[in-house]
Image 1 (cartoon, rainbow, N blue to C red):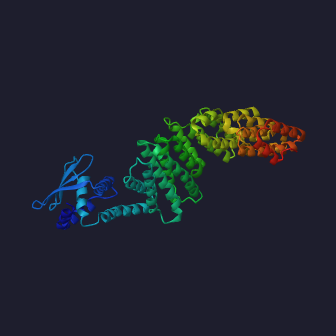
Image 2: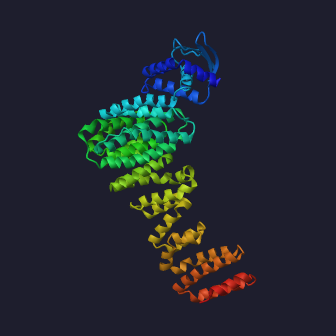
Image 3: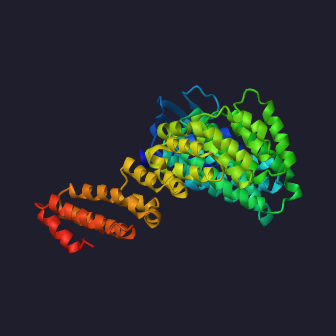
Length: 516
């Protein structure tokens, strides 16, 4: 049948060419419906969904079957250039177009026709790019998004990332030639793209898009810093106003991934929109959004506009789930040298730390989070009893921070007791300031060394005996430094007597030359 289909295409070559020219004129890639129609028809052809059933050379008619969700029958009148389909669509449908494409590709290159047809959109988008208006740049992003997203399945993470990278590459082609416009173009088009991704995720599984959007927002922070460092063009004012509207739509009107929406909002209002008047205007607009859960966002403006009393009232409503966002606000207050706001935020966060760390954080992120949080707490004044409560909130993940505090307080016995309590290894204890403790109060670490060494001995292997002797050597130096020579010699004799039957251990002790 493929050979006869080729013969049919050769016989009606002029009609098919004319038909394709008419289709090219009637359909335009900038129209979403037309673009979807051509894309789906070409997809059917590439996947072998078109099957020719019969050809009547006298009536010049061709019958074909197109495999869709439900198979459909298509009848083509080759001389009159008319086509009918059994599907409900009365106009030119994807099934009819797929059959025409199948005929055309027997003699000509369908890929070249598709490429030339789509170039019409590129030409139109180039004209839009040169108009330099928010509406024209919106159209560029929307058109690029529609063209690329339609080519992939949005149910697979790999396809999503691939599609978004394609969109970004296509958007670069329309970047203004003038360097002073380029940073704004990047920020604006990326913002519109993020908005479209948020909107798509609202109708699908947001987790498919979370990592991609989070990465884009992190990159956006970098792009905003570049833009904010450049002189602002007078002609760019409409774009800045439009950016405010884009961010408002994402933050106030969408409901998915509130943490990422806050991160985006934070980036724009901290990095780009730094004018006090614009911030006050946005704060007033935010206050009008009664149906929007805006406590975090209000707190952001309280920090930016230095309104500590209003901030204090908001912090009464802190919840454990919002801890990362409040940590962002605490960092902002510290960067602005606003110790009052920083103190208000950190005091309000303290009761929720334990719940957040142990319930909402993954195990491998807990220590990092606690370390970063304690760096903020070190910047404010706190009574010792409150700081003790803070370390209780940190739990085992705050051992390093608590160790630093105890060393600062010269509470070396408590430092040792802490590492006894949590069963620290030698390496971990040393990373928590053991060197300083030995320098200041060497006698206090002797019990800790003893426990660590016996733990190795209990493993009953040559390797562990060597490790035990290594620890005892450190203990020997600490005893010598603390003036505990007699204690140390007595201790070594007792160890040798207690483990006299462990010949390998005795050999390692002799090799280590432990007695003073």
